[in-house]
Length: 74
Ligand SMILES: [Zn+2]
Image (tube, rainbow, N blue to C red; front, side, top):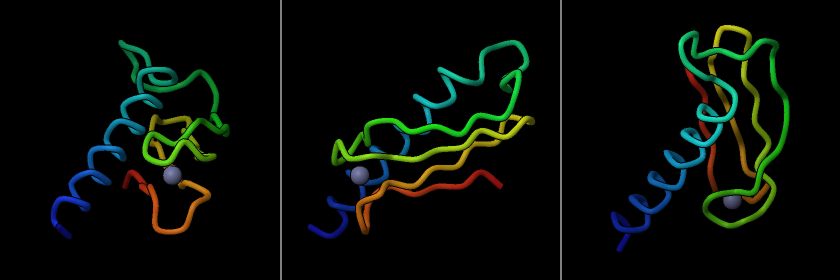
């Protein structure tokens, strides 16, 4: 059950990252015209997920719910 829960969180994180990249990192440059700092509906809990996109196209995000989605591009 733990593995299944982890997988659900991982896929929700992947969906959130993909949504941010699709909206803010269009081809061919895959980076925004200016750094982005915004929020979206969390893909796992539908809460508030804050995200950032840097000028070089790296994304990071964190859901406001404890133990939910968080990621940071290196
Ligand atoms: Zn969440």
